Image (tube, rainbow, N blue to C red; front, top):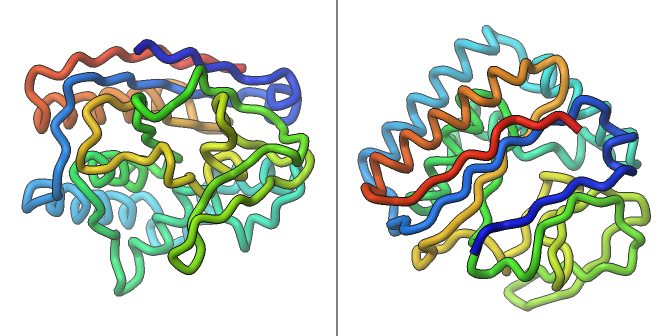
Length: 232
C-alpha cells in the first residue's frame, strides 16, 4: 500500500515550520538485532555526546523547540518528553539504549545520532491514511498496562497521530501504540522523521538519507521511497 499522510490546519497553526520526511519501505527484512545494529547504537551514543558537549539533551535548541510545542498543547515536557529527548536521556545513562529488533534499532540509532524524533509504523497494520491532528478527546488509544489491553483517550487538544481505527501515537511523538509498531514479522514500514525550527530542513533530509542507507544495507532489495521535506 502507499500511505497517505496529512497534517491538520490546527497543528500547522500550533507549530509553524514543522517539517516531516517520510521514508516508505517495502520488502524489508526484520528480526532480532545483532552485532551490526548494536555497533550502530553505540556509535549513535558517541555522536550524541559529541553534539551535546556536556549539555543535557533538553538544552539542545531542537529539543527546546519541541518542549515549547509540547507546552503549547498542554503537555508537561519534563514529564512527557518527545521520543528523541527520551532516548537521548536514556542513552547517556548506564542503562544505555534498548535493543528491540533490527528495524527499530536502526531508526533509534538515527534518532539519537541526529537528535530528531523518528518513528516507525507497520504499513500492513495502518488502516487508511495517517493524520496528525489535535484530538477531540473521544479517540481510542489501545495500549497495554500490567499485561492487559486497555483503551485510553487523549486529552482534548492533544496532538496525536491517528488512522481510521484510532490513535497510533499520543502527544505527537511521545508514546506509540502496540497495534502498529514494528515487530520481527514486519516487512513494510513507514518511518517518519519530524523536526521544528531551528533545525534546518537539510539536516532532516540528511538523517533520512542515512536511514535509507541503513535500510538498504540490512534489507538488500527493499523498495524505498523518500517523500521530501515539507514544511507545514
